[in-house]
Length: 193
Image (cartoon, rainbow, N blue to C red; front, side, top):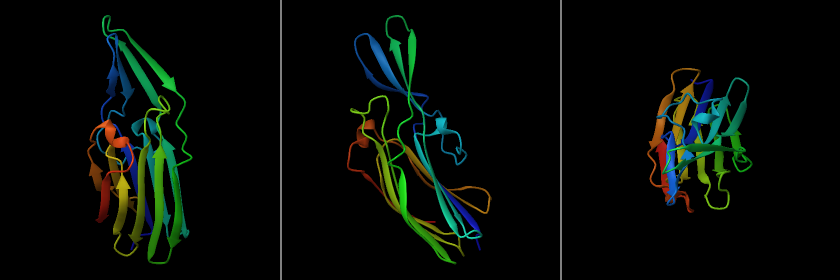
């Protein structure tokens, strides 16, 4: 029987830099997270664009949900000279990364999470990364159920970790094109593992 179940939901861009647009003089890149799928991104916001970390603790009868956004940088590359200029932006707001409807019984836990975080480099032009999930956890079996949806860009990952053991990958999604950030969310998620 589980005492603590941690769930980690994150969206990330696997490339180091992603070409966004170009004109006759420059190439314009958005910074990615330069990584593959992994649970181990906690407290390292450069490794994701948006994350929610849920800690269900039956020992203390609590459900804690942490949220974070990653940094935004752009790179402008002069096509003639190859010279690069990197610009940093303030962190995107995390105000739309929320949760509600938390219920904890001696045998189950459930909640609803929603994530929405825009691009601080192009707030008017770049749609937000979005997800929303209803989540339930069975304490006896450690079985986790996710029902919801997310955007088709960037990569998405969901992990569980029981009693500080080895993390288990529950879900991985490989990104489509940046155009899949446009509403509505186009990828349905429904699993129990």
